[in-house]
Image 1 (cartoon, rainbow, N blue to C red):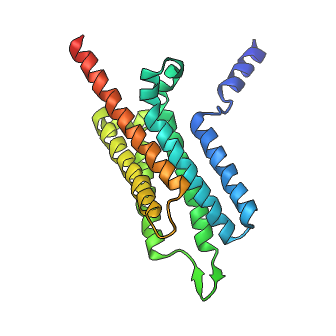
Image 2: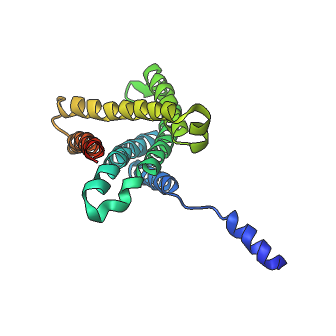
Image 3: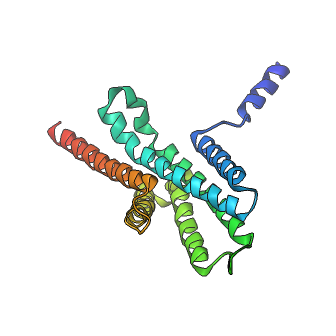
Length: 214
């Protein structure tokens, strides 16, 4: 009986490999892959951060598209309730991105006449976007929502998602129309995120219509 109780305690405290943790580990592996590809220095860290930022764009797309995909496509029905863990994964990946960005900025490296470091613009971006990431993470916590209310949590989640959606879309449009010509990633990210937004609007419309007709 004692052994059974001990086994139960051991199983209860066994760490769970959740979807947010899996996405964070994937982002970490991607960042180190970029670090190894470009050299173990500040340039490699910046490239790793860039890969993580791009990876997170598709995590955001998956989080936005999960519910409508589960609603309208029968084989994808299990995805309908994966929006929350995917958004938690998005916030976790963003944390890995900030870690790589900070390390690359603090590791000053000469680049011709100029030098790389944590500039005022980078600091402002990290502070503000980091604060939005914390707001997103808190709004997805059930304990936090019980304390502040479901409506407040939904508003916080919505504002944070809109902020990141605009970051990716506006940055993608700006870089795709720059002097270097259209970028495959930025063009694809804009298309995917616009498609996710249209799918969310369509899903909301049909949900409201079905409730009205019921």
